[in-house]
Length: 235
Image 1 (tube, rainbow, N blue to C red):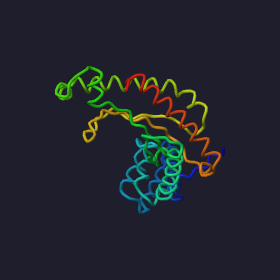
Image 2: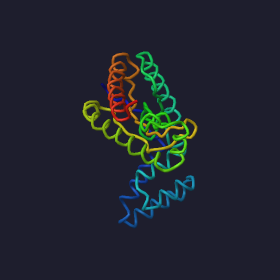
Image 3: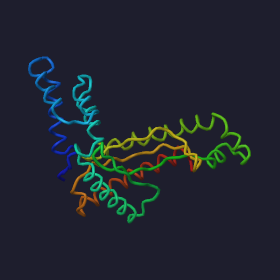
Image 4: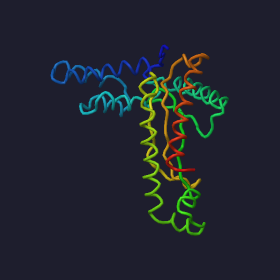
């Protein structure tokens, strides 16, 4: 499968990035460096862009993050549109295959889309696990124990999932895994960690065979997630 990517930086963005690279390379050559600084002073850059350009402590990656804040230097609008189309297509195909309890998101910085599964523990879990009545559970949730216990339990789930998904991570180009930090969703009452499947954007996924192959691999990951979650949480 060809991995057709849309470049993050626009032509203007690439030109400014090239200028930054040259500045960093020519720091030890005062004559060339001064000439480049003069060129920058004669251009009308945004203050944050100019400050980062002339700041030798700002590396290329950090400078790219500055450029990403301005539409003139990036293809952000195009990327958002294309990534959203891919996200919707993948999610729709997963739903056709009876996959549930997931959602999609896009990541401009990571060059693709996320398919995300929430792994959570709530009051019902504590009631079952410790055989508590509702009043006892409510009391438990007010202290630190519930959050500390949920943190340990969910991190154990993530550890097992990560171990079992290593072979998939290595086998497929353009797919990798990540997870969120532990957090408490007050609206739902759940303690959560999100397991994220990052899929690098490729135009090939708009074709049926590559899309179906991708969805099959995601389903394999979902099966691992569900199995390890059930094994650890005993829901």
